[in-house]
Image: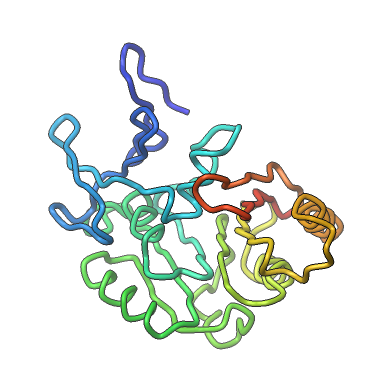
Length: 238
């Protein structure tokens, strides 16, 4: 993490700023908000408040015990986001990945099954080049996989479908490079419940990931932002 001596903030990337307990991203569309978030200028540059209570990735960055910047993709690259929702996290990722008018050449393939979410994402993409909204099922790679002719180094999944771990592992095998970072947001109640308790359930998910060719760098509990959720920080090794 880049430190700024004598300052009260950290720059997690060129565009992501941690100011005390608040996360901000440099606004790629000056003057515009996406979900009613606040705007603020630092050193004459406009930033958008990244609300971790409305973003699993934002919550994970605030809750991780490791370097927060390691959860971000490399700017200017192509990434895959499964379960893109209405675009809250996507918009902040776009700030970091693409910049104004996509000067950095980044690309976000954002897949969601809900037509309402796709409408919001399509509206967002009009002012944010590099964002590619896709109406699709996270399981059905054949329908949209052509948009990713090359494997990526960063993949995020937050889908409200059953069998989320299997969906995640399948997507990683198809689209994530060996050594690439795969982030899985998992809600306890969304998985098959056997009554053993949340910790045991999340422990079994971690074992399943390891047994199937992933290392698990961290299991981040999102308590306080998204209760009953864990974000698994993994890398594909097979």
